[in-house]
Amino acid sequence: MNPNTPPLPMAWINSNETTHIHPRTHHLWHLSFYWGRNTLFLFPNWPGNSRGMYGLGLIFVFVLAILVEFFSNLKLVKPGSNRAAAVFFQAGVQAVRAGFAYMVMLAVMSYNGGVFLAAILGHAVGYVVFGSPIFKKDMDR
Image (cartoon, rainbow, N blue to C red):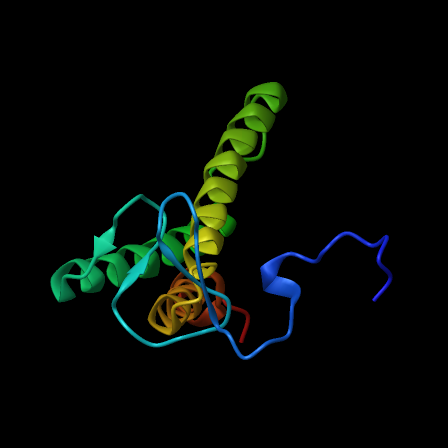
């Protein structure tokens, strides 16, 4: 390695260590996927070490992912409506969708396998319910 090159962040270094403890907060950071309920995601000290709170956290991520799919397929603007109002309304819906999508992404960045599966399953269920033609009334057959 060139001595003039700045050191790489911990997440980019290949080593046998899969965890990193933040020096100021002393929270455990995982740098690869792991299984277990001792994790933090989205909010400080949440869900903590409780099985119930971890389960609630997984349900929360699952529902957030479903809501992302719901807002992705939401069509509330009717043809012939005020164009400016429709654009601003759709922009608001897009902002809410993007906010929920970023929250799901940040939760997955905890590298917890359960959180990852909850997000993937939430997106899949949301797509089946809101995006796929299975539940559409105007399906072409």
